[in-house]
Image (tube, rainbow over all chains, first blue to last red):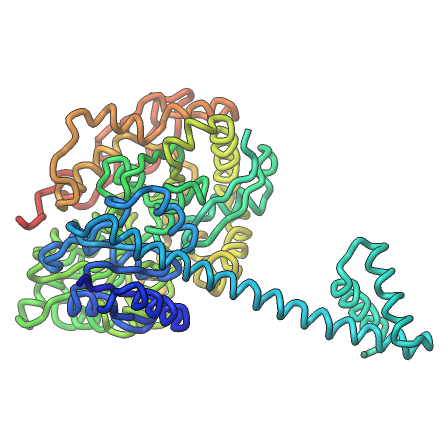
Length: 194
Length: 399
């Protein structure tokens, strides 16, 4: 069975990738985090495949091992030598890069890569969703603040204040959260602390 | 014509031409909408350019050649028609090492540029010791300069010293933690070690090779063939940005831009002095004047000389990266270092350009004039201090 090494600074993603690889039958997986010494780990474990996060600067270090074969009995080859270019492109765009030893069958590698690409994309989607959620939460807070100011100064009901804010946003072709932030900032400038 | 471009860079002072072209509107002037993307490794730059996620990028000068030769990455052919500048890197030693040389072998510090004999003598005194040096990428001028400097001092690679690849932005931390004894990297990473008191600059790249090659703008051959007009617009924008950078006043302004979080994200005090020609070698020394530490356009700095390519081939071969030299180097270099495209752009802007592809090989220790040009061009010194740079000896170990 081939030995796999995962180099990822994100422990959650690395754990979920490990679980997915275990599920498809890869039993021997070594995880290396951000603060571990990658060179030592590679020398100790001698992995057959290394999957590395493209946001890790360690890629340059890893690649140089190819040129120092007396220290690395197994040559490390950038994966696309045996994989197709489309898979490589998908991997790079998902932010994952792979290195393999010379004699690994291309098919096996492709399956590993497909799992990795899917996990990296899932993770990216999760992060985007989280940011979107955070943004929406912030919007709600700002809208509430703006509504409060409007209610106090113009004696409006909550619903009226909201309608006014919404009209303000539509007239200026803005999102309501953005309009609320601008309004709160302008009121703060005028000396009215919300 | 393709107008929206994504260009990659690594946080180093010599991405200045790209930043100037963006921030001063030279890209816009030539009809381009450019976004700059900061990358974490040279391998990322190479792969993202190879697969079209980036249109072009800040690259180490030998990278397009290594890619085209198929000895780096996937072997997707690349080319460069523009050099982003000359000089700009240095070799830094751990302060403790330099102190030991000062104390025990002061005679080895009597000459400038400093030679590495003191290191060798230190090693001979402590037989069990092996030095570890960091360099930024295997296919880099940094790697070749570092090897030549160590070899000149009598150090034997593998036996006395090991060279490890570490990305530039991690060098200072690796030195601080004692994982390496020294390194060769671009700015601001040498000045940062000096300002923290943990490193001494032994030599700058200018000291070893007056006005030597450094970085280029790399694209794939396929991209260049598919986008000839965009490529020309890009070259024109960069040429104008480089001209803008030649003005001393503008060096102050680029330093402020480079220090920003989206580019280098370091204090202005680290970026500015070298750009103004003031360079600090040691924490306990005053600055030395090095007006040519960063050359962005004068001395035909943007021209992608084939003579530099010839030198890279020799270095790749000598260091064991390239097992056999190509049968027809002239044709290969013409494909990789596109002097023809450079000349078209310079002609468009009515700027002078060399009419020869090979820089005359004489050693000039004073400014001179290149007459083989569309108009005579003022050139700087081109003295090379180390003999092993001009005639490399084979250092690669048999496998």
